[in-house]
Length: 206
Image (tube, rainbow, N blue to C red; front, side, top):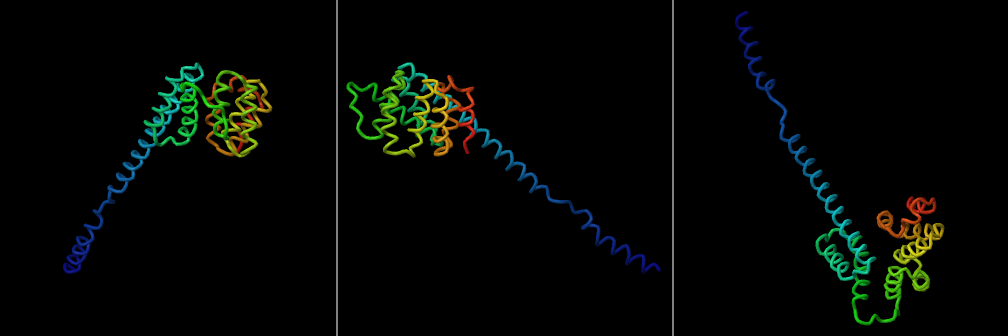
């Protein structure tokens, strides 16, 4: 009987270490750290994007006030300081070219599609909608799937408070490049039609 008790005690002792084992905490801690790092990175990216948008809007306002030197400086800062915001870069480079064109002594007459787009942007900036529409329609005839041409056509019609035409062109611009949805949400020139259903429907374009 004593022998049996010793064997039982021995068996219990051999199992004790197994019972005392605890699950490793390293993996959950590592996961938590990774999650925090991911959230921190996302927050940093979001903050950088917000600053980039702010600089973009500042540059646009300067350009609309015909302060082309200040606008050009802000657009260059956007391109240099926020290299990851490539969608904004595309638009910023177009506006930068407009500023530089206005600052040059004698702008050349528009020839190719890109020149017409730049000239149309300048025309819209000085509120010459008729000239802008003529140039943009000519550019659209060369390339109907150029999203920026469609976006600019939407802006031109918005300046005329023609919400239906503006919505139609904006919808096409968004379908060609979804970034135009974000641009339109921050574009002051759409304020005249911002509450119109045609504009709201265009923003919902897939």
